[in-house]
Every structure is written in C-alpha cells, then in structure tokens.
Amino acid sequence: MKQFAITAALALFLGQAFADSAADASFEVLAEKYLQDLTSFSPVGATLIGNHSADDQLDQVDAKARNKKAALYRKYLADLDQVAFDSLSRANQIDAELLRAELQSNLWSLDTLQQWAWDPLVYVRISGSAIYGLVARDFAPIEQRLANVASRLAQVPRFLEQARAAIEPERVPKIHAETAVQQNPGLLSIIETMVVPHIDTLTPESRDRLNASIETARNAVAEHQTWLEEELLPRAAGNFRIGAELFDAKLAFALNSPLSRKDIKARAENEYEAVRNAMYEIAKDVYASQHPYTAFPDSPDEAYKQTIIRAALEQAYQQLPPRDGIVAVAKEQLQQATEFVVEHNIVTMPNDPVDVIIMPEFQRGVSVAYLDPPGPLDVGQKAFYAVAPLPTDWTEEQVNSFLREYNILSIQDLTIHEGVPGHYLQLALSNRYPSALRSTLWSGPMVEGWAVYAERMMIDEGYLDHDPLMRLINLKWYLRAVTNAIIDSAIHVDGMTRDEAMKLMIEGGFQEEREAAGKWVRAQLTSAQLSTYFVGYQEHAEMRKAVEAAWGDEFTLRRYHDQALSYGSPPVKFIRALMLGEPVPRATQ
Image (cartoon, rainbow, N blue to C red):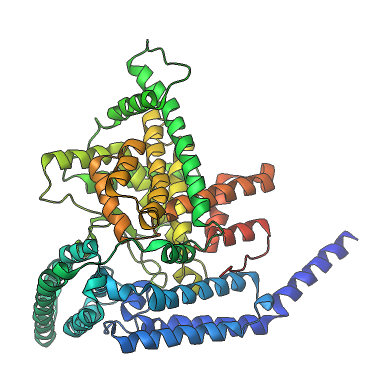
C-alpha cells in the first residue's frame, strides 16, 4: 500500500510535469525570443545583462525608436496572452508573470510617464553605461571591446542630438537639470580612466580609429554640456513631484506587491515608533555603561528618549574612517563579513570575484554606494561594490557630517548590505538560476529587501560579538529604510517640503545633515524607488516567519537561505509560494 502511494504520487507528479509540455515549450520560445530582442529595445541595456550581439550599437532614442519599442511591447503582450497560463509549470508561470509585468511597466513608462521627455539623466546614464559596460569587465578580448567602444563613441553626436530633440525643457524639473549638468562629463572621465590606458595595446589602424572616435565624443559631450547649462537649465520649470496617479502606478510596477501606498504608509508609521523605542532600550544600556548611576524614568517622554539615543550614538561617531580611506575600510570589512558567514554556516558562499571601487563619476549624485553585479548572462564576471568619494568642494563641517553618518560601524552595515551576505552574495546566487529570463527580470524589492534583511540577520547571529553599538547602528539603518518609505510618497504625493523631510530624517531618523540632504535630492530624482527597501524587508521577514512555522524543527538558517535564494530574484510573493507550496500569485494589473 505504501509502495502504491509513492508510485501514484510519482505518476501524478510526472503527469503534471510533462502533460502540458507544449505550453511550456511555447512560452520558452517566447522567452528566448524576448531575450534576443533586448538589443531591439536597448543595445546598451543588452550589453549590461550580458547579451553582446549589439555591443557596437548605441541606443536610438528618437520618436521613431520609441514607437517601434512600444509596438514591440504590445506584440509581446499579445503573444503572451496566447500562452495557456494554467498549463505552464510553476516555474514558467512565475516567469510569465514577470515578463507580463515588465512589458506592461515599460509600455506605461513610454506612453504615460514619459520620462524620456523630462529627465535628461536618462540619456546621461545610457551614454555612460554604453562605454562603462564594455570596459569594466573582461568578457571578451580588450581589442574587441575597444573596437566596440570606438563604434559607440562615434555615435555619441547622433545620440545626444536625439536626446536634445526629445527633451522638453519646460517639463524638466530643476533638480534633474542640475544633476545632469554635474553628471554629463562623467563619460569623459570613463574615457580618460578606463579607455585611454589601453590605447597603446592596439594596432596603429585601430588606435587611430579609437582616437578619432574619442575626439568626436569629446566634442559632442562638450556641445551637450553647453546646451545643458545655457539652454536647458535656465528653462527647466517642471515639477519634480509626479503626483498621486503617476506615483501609485509607478509604485505598483516597482513593487509588484499587494501592498498599496496607504498600506505602506500605515506600516511604516507603526514601524517608525517601534524602531525608535527599540533604539531607546539599547541606548539605555550603552549610556549606562558610561554613566552607571543613571536612573532612567519609568515613562520617559520623546524628548528624553531622543537625548539618550543621541548620546549613545555619539559613542559610535567617535569611530570615524579617514576621509580618503572608506574604500580600504570597506574592503577589510567585506572579508570580515565573508569569514563570519562561512564560519557560522549561514548561507552558501559564492566564489565569484568582487572588487571594492571608487564610484564612476557618471553614477554619482544619487547614492553613497551601490553593488554593480555582472549581467545575468555574464556569469562569473566581476561584481563591483562602488563607493562614492567625498566631493572636493565640501567644507570641513560637511565632511565631518558625512563621516559621522558613515562611521566604522555604519560602513559595517553598508558592507553587509552591498556585499556579504547582501547584494553581492544574493545576486551571484541569483545568476545561477537556470532561467535567463528570470535572472534578467529581477525584482528591486526582493533584492533590496534581502539586503536589509541580511543586515538585521547578521546582527541577530552575533556579528561583532553582539556589540550593542552595532545593534544600535543597525536599527538606525533600518529606521532609514522606514523613513525612506515615508518620505517617498509624502514628497511626491502629499507635497512634503524640504524642511519637513529634513526634520523627519535628522530628528526622527537620527541622520546626519549630509545624509539627509543627499536623500532629499535622491527622493526628488527617483520616485517609488525609496519604498523598495522597507517593502522588500517586510516581505522577507514575513516569509521567514511563515517558513519557520511550516518547517518546525527542520528549519535551519543555511537550509532556509539556500532555498530562498535558489529561485533567482523574483518578487518575494513568488518565492514564498514556491517554498510553502502555495499557488503562484497572478497579477492584479
């Protein structure tokens, strides 16, 4: 009877796996065609994910190209509608949902958001990435990559001319124009630091071609810089606040989550109070270690809590990195975190190469650090943990403000987030997932949420010997994720002013002035992105709790983490469905 039950179950499984292989085959053909067509959408974007079939081409960004892309998105959506979703395997059901969400999001961005018309940074990033993506990693011989660099640089005048024709100055927010003025020369920096040093390795003919292309690009960038400064910046009159209708739609696409803006706001406000109270409890112990005879009141008011938390944080702020030594500190801490993960059997440790680098100039102005992984089709190539240098024009007061925020313990938290077991580790494992489509269409909230979860989990597991100051800094960083979610919608929908945002971040979130000022700029430039950290963390925390309950005594961190990260980087709701055997959630839009 037992043998029969096993055989019957196996037969049922095999029947489900193979009976509908026609639907799976149809979808997989569509998915493969989409991946090949990425060069039709954006040759530069294709390069960055590891599709190198159009490395010599620079994106077309005129109206004809936009119309062509929109038509192609609609065609893929129509083709996807012909696939029998219920007949797909669970893995392909998830990939189909991811592809549909991506197509709908891209089509909405083109037709409705129209960022191409009011955000000059779109074009700055494409031009910078076009060259950076060819020279940063050794995916092909340097001669071949430099030949493609020459081809793309020769197309820069056409590309920037199309960009200027697309941009409508009166719709451009002043902050976007100002940031574009700062970042536009970044392409020249890439040429000087990452292309020119290799010129002598080329044949005379190839060298002459590359030098000519470099001169062409330099002239085009200079012409564009003049236009940005003299034409665009004086006329930029757009509103950086995108409003409720656009924000809600963009948020839904960015999160692919059942949580609405109002849900997120309610959760974030509740968490704000809870985290501050937790910080106070830890701060009391830190404060008492220095002032052992302190009698804390039974019912302290918020002003008292604020004072004690700030006093405790001051102890962490005594541990500052050198102004020019943040990269060196991050390298040392990355090795330290890696050793802890391995020794405590927390998760499988990939051996993919990773470097800590100075952030490229064309990427500066939005965040202090980021993890630049290799494209999902370039498995085994280097990841870069990039850290922005301090601006040379900052005053000593501003420098000190920044270093207090990014003290030694804060860099520990940052390195966990960007490196191990955060983005570097998670994305390296994600790229091993056999579906190239899923690896390409990764979820921001899943990735950012995992990194925030990794910060908390490492401290819970005893990283730095349960140092209460490290715990306090970790909670401060989580409070940053909470306030990110609050200001994201408050700024773009509710009209939150700079003073209101700065007060929430500095007084409520204990951030230093330089961090808060940078976040105010970032919030204006990147609507809906700042919510991904908090929402993603909430979903990861709830999934772990549910899996722990389901697995009972069989739960271990290594087993949980390895399985959770084995499905790539889709939205957490899909990972949860796979881990708990639940139906694959269908899109609500």
